[in-house]
Image (cartoon, rainbow, N blue to C red; front, side, top):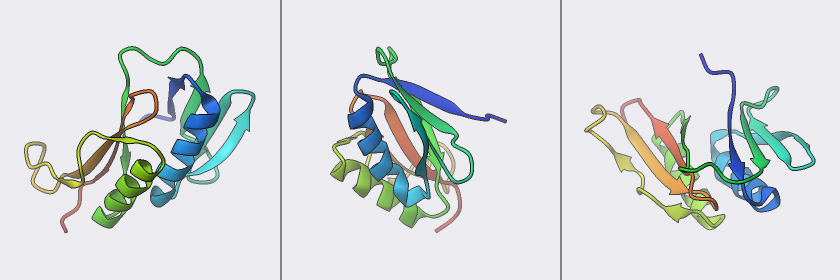
Length: 121
């Protein structure tokens, strides 16, 4: 089981604003921060971190679990409104499995951020 993960970003302030907005529909909030680091998660513990440094090359793919397809849709809208770039609109991805419903957005540094729901309808 993974305890936490993270990515390096070129501008912590910009990325903090992006992730605060994009992950809010999934119940994530900014739980810890200091200097150029920020930890997001569902209280009480952050499980996704950003840190200002040279961005990861190649960019990283991270998928966040959504409880519903509506959350996936809300994630996509929020991420796009926060400056993300489309990398796959919300929809079924039956090549993974029949109920795989996901959306993909590139963050300000090109990391592929996904929200995915695995349950039917």
